[in-house]
Image 1: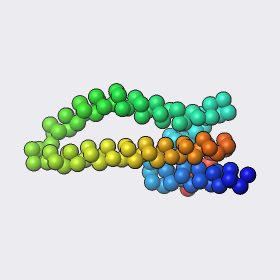
Image 2 (image 1 turned 180 degrees about the horizontal axis):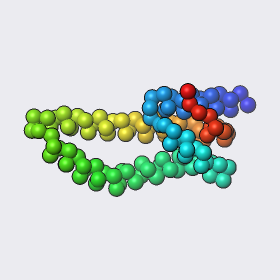
Image 3 (image 1 turned 180 degrees about the vertical axis):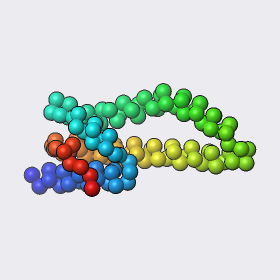
Length: 120
């Protein structure tokens, strides 16, 4: 029982840090509200679909948009454009990892009413 309480506290702490750091917002809560006993991993499934789709379909679109973006960059600012894109890629990877850890802990804990909890 104590182990489960610790898991719930860890899940709550991880969830709060996602909000505090600006990685998730009210839309995350809206997804959680769609989750129920019949679909206990709904949010994780939606996030996984997003990452799978963005890795295949999104990469093509990103490349097109980056090409357009680079056209707008002056020759002297190409490196700045590349750095911006690299930073975006890093943030994408960080978010993905943070959500993976959160979902891993959430699966280990028994279901709770997280959707009713509003972040600070």
